[in-house]
Length: 550
Figure: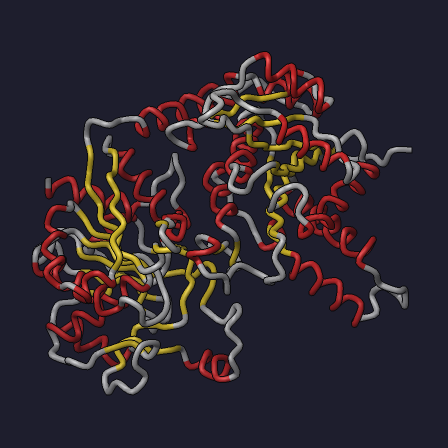
């Protein structure tokens, strides 16, 4: 007899190639189902031995997204939060390493009561246990679970086994969506379905049959190929959903609804769906209209150190920053033209700093290590002296403090302990609680992570932007502004407009508007709380300053 269950589970898997858009598909599915009155939560399963994403190289893996509870996760978690406008927690993210670690810890604690603990079934059962906890914690009607990697890879076999086992446990409540790529070879000029046919059969070999197939490709899928996929992949033609390349990822939910996907999902799920929320959908459509606005632009330079990967530029290293810029620009009826600049270039050729004058604003995002740091400091000085709107995030705020200490206070060797621990003027230093941790090389999860409160100083840019006295923002860093230098810095005009409730930690640094149109940095990462329909107030204040410069 089938177990009684009040929730529906949708597993999203990928076929043919990686980077086919599973995360955005999962996010879009969540959005259109939420718009039908269902409470949706999302889970990402990463097939890495890493326990979390915190120690992964951003130029290889992309951005590390930090949740409110401090969990360091894959960037897809950011997409889930942005599309669903929700707050997810640690239980919504798992890796191979995290699952194995949990099973081993439970075995050591005798929680298996002396059983022989094996890869199968105990690893898949742990995956299932975590999925159920996430559903309960979020009181979800629908749980969307994205399994990382591509069908046929060894790394995700155990997660597919977990999905298969859940289907046996809840045959009427577990469903599968495959996102597969259909290439159109230029020399042939015809969209090919054969790779997708093989991908579906590989999935079948794991005991899983997809209920829907999202057909990714350069162009829309025609009826002939829908019928072909239906015939050879055992999927009804109406459940083969065309998902062609679009200008913006925010067009994807609209494209899905053109194909009546939410109607089809609701029918298959058997869930208590309401009629589409027209007001919410109208807001999303209006947002997408601004995305396509190409007339009014604002030029933003993002100066970072995690762009280059071989011969390619990987903007995913700063995905949340880029999206946050977009949301605030769109809200001001502007389309951002973003240029990715590498700070190392300013070290090699300082004359290139003059090129910054052609931008309406400069953003320096987070980072670690000494690479390109002097180039960043030079860019900060140039922005301050030439009154170019500047927004520093985490590392970008620390660069403000170092630059100001060097060039305004006259402390020429001012630095951060991270770069030069022998400096006599460590204006950025490590927290006392972290020193012993780092001494033992325990870097994983050793930072100030997750949500922290801050109090704002009245009459400042930050206070005006937020419109309130207390804020809650997410952090990811080890180093802080050294309190020993705060007094000197403020005497010379730098304002610490946001501080921790006890006044010990500096959260926001800025120059008054009568000195600079917008020169502000945050120790936290405001980009993590920017959503398409709810832009972050600091990013919006920055964009407004950039527009005034035009």
